[in-house]
Length: 308
Image (tube, rainbow, N blue to C red; front, side, top):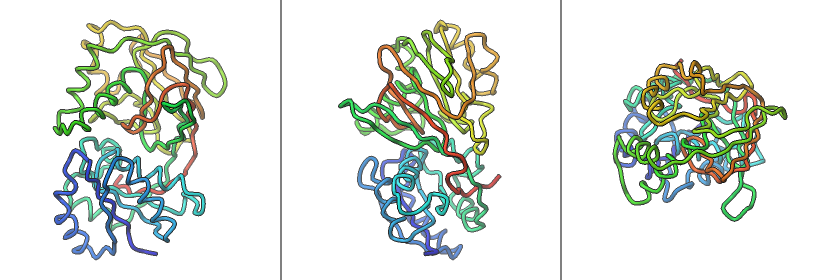
């Protein structure tokens, strides 16, 4: 089937549903055949994408942010009948977080974004498989297209998720949650192995890992990461006073975080992470269980539309 399955996220912070008519007009103007589905709940895009692939769709277009793209990716990866390498993901970045689109230079302007989709320039990128511990102690599996984190990073996402459930919407919501987390979060002791070898065993403020560069609206916690190198990049920010963290926050935006003496940086095909007490785990800005957790690279696992 050559049609696109368009998934419009009703929970994205950028108001994707309200802009659907504008998007539909742009799709028609560019003669892009499609069918559309609107999400009704959190993680609904996962079910829509999985069913779409089973119905014969090989192109999934997400209208939303990083969270909606994450859900669609999980839907593609969790079905077992069609290889993920036969599927292409695209995004119209209308969300509160559009960091994956930032790297691939997909603009938030709907007409320009649809023109990029119509050109169909593809890039094959890695995917990270995240295995975590569910609230009931069971085994949870999710897939990551960009960046994830533990410690302070995940606590911010936890607060962000709670705020969205309360109906809060704002372009500054993530930063508000970051500020709240900053004053309430207490460091945890992390034990991390990289490809089976000991890497880190100490208290840490945050742990970031990914195959993409950008998160949190342009921060670069893994500045050297590449989507197609078969490796996961990890940045561990160890013991650091909150005063120094504020003073050095610019390093998160200019890509120099690795120069801080409290920071450890590693690249590997897999990481195993334990924390005491247990830490939330977030992938692509979505909370998905707690530690213990394992992250494994799946090289060149999905096609994506790019403008790079």
